[in-house]
Length: 67
Image 1 (tube, helix red, strand yellow):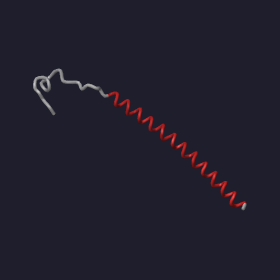
Image 2: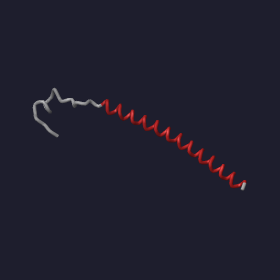
Image 3: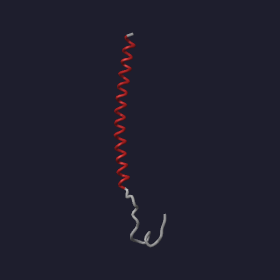
Image 4: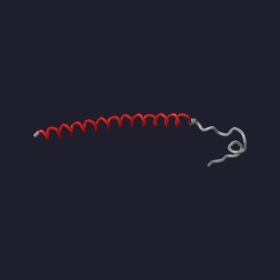
């Protein structure tokens, strides 16, 4: 009878440790994903919203060109 109680306590302790490690990994994953999201957002925001058209030269100013 004593062995079953000890094994149940050991299993419960092991599960508690496993859950704590999973929680730490989830927190780290969320931090990494937030950092990547911030990096991507800053890259997207750095792109000009309106393309700059040519104002001098023969391509796009004197000739009608399309790609």
